Length: 184
Image 1 (cartoon, rainbow, N blue to C red):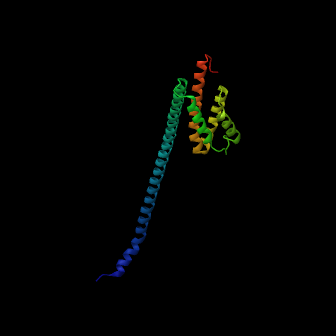
Image 2 (cartoon, rainbow, N blue to C red):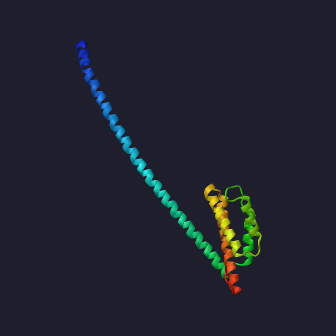
Image 3 (cartoon, one colour):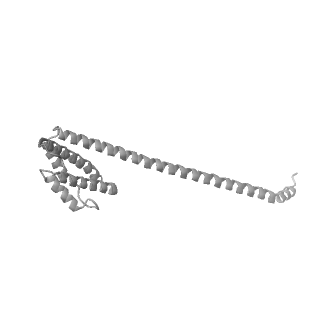
């Protein structure tokens, strides 16, 4: 028969040693887990910084491509207008479209005063080089407002306005060449 008192006595004498071993294993595991957590946090932070830098670089590259495409399209439109491929009726049609689609002014850069000036310039039949400069300035205000507020209507309108400005510049060049003058 099993002597329970001897078993219990033996367990009682070894309990402090077992408790010490359990405590030692617990604290060792806890330290290792904390080390793994710290290493993981550091690695994730490093990866996040790397990703942020790559995203910033990508944004710059996309903006560069956007500027290149915009510049190309403006140059092409201006060239075609100067060559007579794009005519006065097309200018009038685009001007009417721009006047009809004029975005509402409710912001910091694109104010009601700027909107009225833009409408006034869109209604002009004979546009001058100074008018072109003013349209260019207004388009930059629209773009700045679009970038800061994210208003898609301003972003879309900006590109249409830039096409109109390029068309006007080409027509002015063509007119100046026909008159034997120089575009100021």
